Image 1 (cartoon, rainbow, N blue to C red):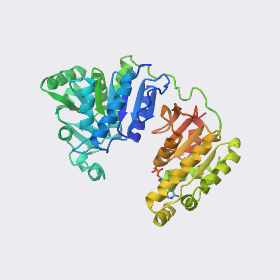
Image 2 (spheres, helix red, strand yellow):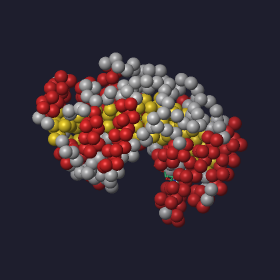
Image 3 (cartoon, rainbow, N blue to C red):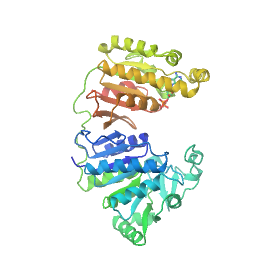
Image 4 (tube, rainbow, N blue to C red):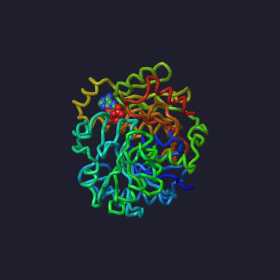
Length: 425
Ligand code: ADP
């Protein structure tokens, strides 16, 4: 198998977002959790997104992990690698975008790298090198107060220059609008003057298509999911990938018992649980008992085992904001959250041991704890159940074939649990 596109994402949710975007553009895409083992068996795919957690770690670590991911992807035949960053360019003067970009550029042999976090669909646009979040420049957006990476400068040429050794240039919108050859000429000019990277303006999706087209002449690019969209469309337009390749996720049913777990206490999830009560057996955990020890998870599993043969079940720790606040006041927010996440992971593990092969999880942190516990190395991304929430088929999991849906709390419509199971056959 030869990958048409390799991606290295600097955080997990960004990786999922990119994998989902590539899938929507027709690329068969696998998202891996961390750098995969050399022997990981992959189905026939066009793209792999390696999810790292390197956005806010020490820059030398971010560099070594990204280089390991790059090596793995190149080893699987990826000609082009996208280093996926946040569409709000989350970083500091210490990195990690600049240091990772420079290390990967050195490994790739490219003279110059195209960089743009633009993703018009989500309101991220770049003009004259300045990043806009909706209608305001980055430094006037809520990102100015981000706890880890406060962004005080919207001019990405300056931002990237402060964290890079190479000179950073600009390919402006007027050039992008003139098309791929104009961009190529500008990049050639910049590279000739010793610039190792250029911020590229993009306001509309057609700009991303132009950029994707040019980027395929190179071996490395840096951007957000919008850049992924541009690359994917260029791969399809050039005939290197056959769009709409059959949906390998839902082609072969997995069958077996189905279960849902809810650890999110968001409004949307509370409403989805209430709706699910009409169509499946629902168990509400006692959060106080969960924090007190492991019995609650054991009881929940015994409850589930009796019912799994009769249809899908749902186990929820979720409670109202008042109850959450009271529990946190008694035990501390982190201790309560961690105990409940681990109980959910215990339950997920027990359910899979009992034969569950279709699992829906509500809650971002809850999903992370469950996936870690199940030791799933990666997912083939399928059709969307709701915006941003695809069906996932586990790849290389020790428990064999399995379908999952992992959603952050606020995602999905009121019937989310039934909608998910409808697509997870
Ligand atoms: P979301 O995607 O909605 O943010 P998460 O799973 O990321 O959901 O976060 C929810 C957090 O709340 C988790 O740490 C979870 O363990 C915790 N939690 C779940 N149920 C309760 C509860 N009843 N009381 C307090 N915390 C809870």
